[in-house]
Every structure is written in structure tokens, then in C-alpha cells.
Length: 418
Image 1: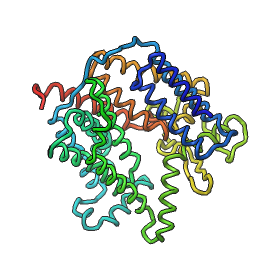
Image 2: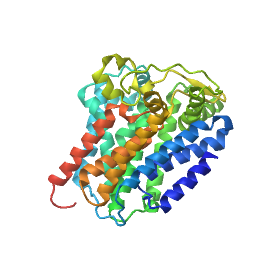
Image 3: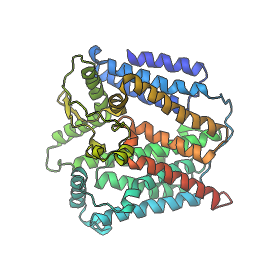
Image 4: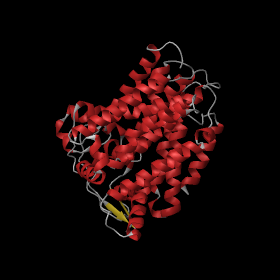
């Protein structure tokens, strides 16, 4: 029902001139897919108000692009040089090795005692006992930036041994993290940013081709990466289980991570409105500052908010159908708590103006490096929105800073395209 309404809305907006590759359109399609999957798998008329709210919020995000001047032709592109990709690839591997050393793990130990190392790192991750240095804090922004650089570079270079080597070198840290520390979200975000870097680099030069991008080699690499994700699930206490239980458990993990947030948000939204819900939810503490949307910034101003852990904003773990377990409620729960329903919709309009505004600037060739960095930050925002507000994480801000500085270095340090 709501998915059909969303399909009608986006088609009307496209006919009215909204760009199909603008941040607004992509964000709308991202949530259209999730709402559609929710309705197909878990259709419940009494729980559709949450999906209706999402429809309104993302539609407003798209509508904000209407205030900007329409640009019929793309007038600029941004090309990352080979040396920049090489530098960021080696840098991301260096900070990953630094992370391992901070945890007391030597690279050779990973090769010789893989399972014990992986189990130890996974335990540290879930108990929040990682040892952290300044390089560890910089690890995720650098890794994410390296994937954007690679994606951009692939839009112009898709053949030869150099391409293969740079793809492998760039993916080593993110794939290694998902295998040895079960950081699935970080890896998937890195993959999304690779695609985003490719898409928006190619848009500028009118050469986008997903068929070429998804070549046989890239598809094989993707299959191997997905196998790594599956293996990381296997490491989570399933080593001595039966094959049937492993299959069931992996299916449960997959369903929980891919659709649990939609089910949980719709149930929470019904409870928030005072309607029938499967669970009763804890009342969130209301702060003067928008803690659930801007935890990183709020905690600097009011340290009483530091008790809220960004990764687990909500302690409400819910189970649906004896198969889905989650405490993820999307970006929208936090926005509603902080701003109310109407205020959260206004907030989405403002965010849409920011990202769609930089899209308009990029197409017209203004502030090219800043605009491209902001557009890649949008891809970060879009992916993270199904979990919680990306403004809750220092890596979100750090990613923008590292990427922007890297792009400026790309422009200044090399005169000739490689």
C-alpha cells in the first residue's frame, strides 16, 4: 500500500523535473525498497503508519530540491589520480595494521591462529574494550575515503593488472575487519561508498554504466566478499553447532540485519502514537539538546548525555516471529524523540536542502571538491540512516574532513593525469 504510494510520488516528482540521480531521489529509492520489502514479508495494516511517516519524511527530503535552479546538462566531473588511490590504499592498510597492534595482535598471528584472534577481537568489539590510539580513531575515516577514491578512479580505469591490484589493496582492510572483528556495517558502508564514488564521478562526464561496473571480475570479488561476511557470522559462537542450526542462525542474522529495523520502527511508532504494538518500549530521556540525532556534538556541550552509547541508543531488544532480533530503529526514531513528528519532517527538509544544494553546485562545476565531498557524505548518511543518525558518530565528520583534504591534495600534488 505505502510502497505503491511512494512509487506514484517519485514518478510524479521525476516528471516534474527532479533529477533521478540527485541525493533526494536516491534517498527516496533507498527507503522505497525497504518499505516494499517490509510490506511483502511482514504485511500488517495496523503497523503501516510507521511506513507512512517514512514516506512523508523522504518525500519532503526530495521536495527540497525544488528550490534550486534546474541544470539540464552536467558540466563538470572530478577525477581522482592514480597516485592518490595508491597513497590512500597504503594508508588504509597502515592504519589497519596499527589497529591490530593496538589490540596486541601481530599480523603473523592472524595467519597462524586465525580463529582465536578473530574470536578475541569479536569479544572485544561487543564488550567495547578495544584499545584505541589516535590512529585507531582515524582508521575508519581513512578506510572509507580510500574506497571513495577507488570508486572514482574505477570510473576511468577498469582494465589491467593495476586495476586488480588497487581493488584488492583497497579492500584488504575492510574485508579483514569484517572477517576478524565482525564489523559488517563498516564493510558494507565501504562498499556503498565505492559505488557512490564511481557513480558521481561518472555522472559528471556522462559515462555511467552499471553493466560495465558489475563485470565478471567485480562480481566474483563481490561473491568472495559476501562469503567473508557469512564466515564472520560463523565465528559468532557457531563453530561447534550442527549444519542445520548454522543455516537457520545465519538466516536469522541476515533477516535481522536486513529487515529488522523496519519491523522494529513500525512497532515502536505504533506504540509512540498510543496504538496497539507487540512491545512496550522504554521512554527515552528528553534532553534540551537533540541527543539522539546529534550525540557527537551534544556530548561536547552537555557531558550528562555521555551515558548514551551511540552504537546502542536503545536498550529495547525485540524479537519478531522468533526469527528477527534487533535493537535498531532507524534514524527516524531518534529524530522523532528529539524534534517530534512535525519537527523531524522539517529537519528532513533542511537536510535535503543541504545535500541537494551541493548536488546542484557539483553539476554546475562550483566548489567541485567541497561538493563532491558532501555528496559522498550523503552516501554515508543514506546507508547509515537505516541504523541511526550518522551524526552520532565521529567517523561521519572525520570521513568528510579526510576525504576533502585528500581531494585537495589530489588537485595540488600532481599536475598530470595518470
